[in-house]
Image 1: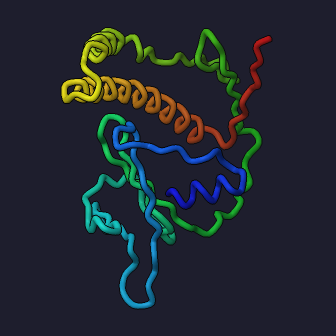
Image 2: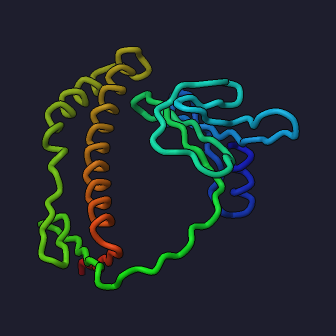
Length: 197
């Protein structure tokens, strides 16, 4: 990761890499997949297990089928302490399929309503933050009174991170369900441009 960060810095693509301690809430590293002439690749997934360099076989919850040639795997720990693996695969390009122009829908994002569809349907966003507001305020108050670097402070930090994670997950769930519904019912989606002066 450090070598990649410096190579991007010298190519003037990124800023200079900054030191990230073990206390940094997000920890991640990337492992490249090697394909030796004899033997098996360094990263492979079979069923609900994945083989990672230096870790060996690890159980994981597979969200989708892994297709194509595996290039690399990024292991990431989020602020709530959960681990995730992202697998980069190389696949052949999908053929272009012509779409029916009559099965298009327009989406206009608004302020009062989350979105208004071209057929007049109004979609309201869920008020997720209101649901967890009191709980979040309670644990943030506890965290502010804890000593920095202490064990109890760390526990409170994880509790706050878990509440934030629940809010983010609920919002993502709403967006994924809405986008899936729109693409299943229509062949094309057009977004309206909204500007505030």
